[in-house]
Length: 377
Length: 136
Image (cartoon, rainbow over the protein chains, first blue to last red):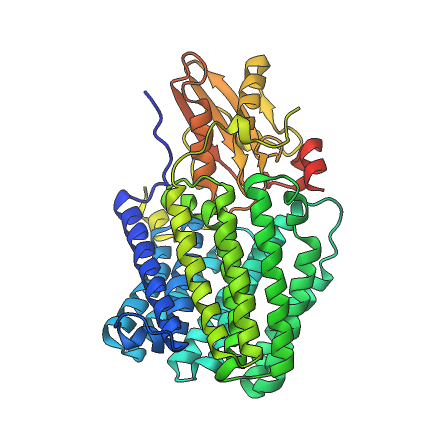
């Protein structure tokens, strides 16, 4: 009797797997809508669309889309049905926000999602304490705290540092785990120093936003430098194929993380305008989306069972992403509106191109023998 | 599946995401033994598992030290794997790749059973020299 292939989420029923796939599909649609909203905020006229997409561009991107995606990854690792509450609540929050414009209701969904993700991490840490899992749990805590602050009525521009830390700590934790593969004792004091700066800066920011945010910025710089020096990407960049592409995207992302930190130190708290646009899109586009471009071909199979081949085509959207962000940044710094808009359109185009490349690469690659690099005795 | 596990109340020591009644005694596996292979047939199966690549690192799972044991029992192959961390979402993908590498590969391999365990915990010391050279 032939063995069937194991499905993601293990023994959890096919119905739950369907719910997971639907949640991701909804989240992806919300992301696309939020992209249009982002363009609208820049003054790029697109087809008539709900005003909520522009108004809630930040919460939709951070909590509805990425909140759902990141908590889905952990739900798949945990293999417990209740952990699906996190991504589903995140997606539901996004849907309710666009459908009703009711910020209160949506924020409650996001609070539930964040709290559930924290519980997921508490369970994972209970099973096995690992320092990298702990860092990622701090990220979940930052997201939950940001959601809570937003629910309590704080404006998005004050909440954004917490949301930013969600991404930085989640990704930093994952990269810390992978850095174990490198030879020799990695001195991690610098890493922990950076994480501590971020944590202290966030808390301090509740009392004194100016000092707090600049401290967070310094923390981002320290973490970026440590990762750029110690990441396993130094080795995988030499292996060619998918690992090399991922390493390139990672290093590009670390540049933008450091740039974000530098801009936060320089500008301090900003609530709107070109400084706000530059600071946060350096992080969310330059760092976060570069990481997405790096890892989607691995994460998609893990979450949905859909395989994605690699090819050099992936470099196209990656290049468009980073070049258009540079353009956007120059436009912001020089107060050139049209250049900034062009950069923003380029960012959106990069994401669209990336989606198309993913779709066109669905399916199994050629025999692994011909693509395997190294490791043979 | 019992209700307590479904609700996630049973936690703590239980970390195995999948266990399919492999013939190998899981509790007897120690860090020093891995990978456990039986005879030259076991060695062949292990070599076949070098086809399974970790997509993040571009290195096969045998050289990464993720294969704890592999044994052929009649028309069935039992494989015991680990992941570098229990929080990795990729275990089901790696499991699927392992099955695909083995089912039907040799005559009369009809069934593949995979257990993913986290004791003993994976450490970088389990990597092969080749993997260490490539990732150092």
